[in-house]
Image (tube, rainbow, N blue to C red; front, side, top):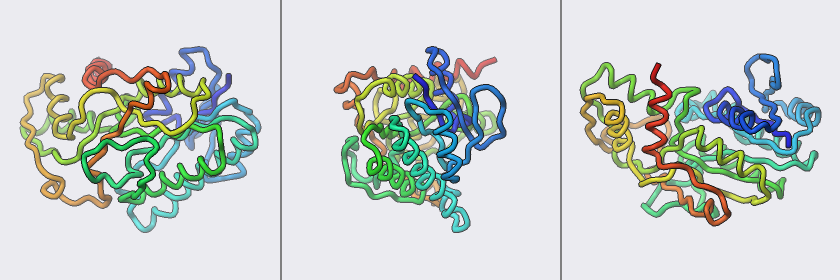
Length: 294
């Protein structure tokens, strides 16, 4: 099997490539950074002809599409919106069109932000009550729709609260702030579950080798928590004495992009389709912190 991976310089794409390599699966990575040799292709996914040329040249059996614009607040800027759409929606269209021409399967990484984040009921993978609150969520939803319209052999995998070694994330931010602040205010009314990229990469590689297509929700196992709960567990496991005070989103201050309050993703479809769920998020956090230590 040969797998083409986009966005390999991001947290998830990096770990997907590592997981494929560790299993001896042939993989070609791509991103907009300069070529670095080896099985890597420079690729701007907003360039449709370049996407087609790259994929038809490599002729993969599957594509894992991790590349995306993920700077949620910056996506709200008027001068960025066209680019965000070009990357998340049109870039995905280019990938899907090439996959259709090749007859290969596509895995599209999406987000809980395609929903409006209201209520307390966990979102089901096949729920169609889409109502994105921000530009990022809207363009990721447009990507989902393109994939499902153009292809039959696809996986749409929604994730949330991602953290990994290859990039910035909430855990790194808390650790950095914890070294300079005795007290931090963290929101308590946004609820979800963290997702550790090495664990996620393992599952994605498991999935891409099957024909069990469809929409899935993937986060680490364990209870649904707030960002405040997550911060407290980070400092507890890191042995740092930081006082974390809970605040509402309104009290914390308005950001450019509205965030969903309810990011609870129902993961049961994974087990129902024979996939091994991810470990508990507390265990994932422990392994992540251990990996950060010199």
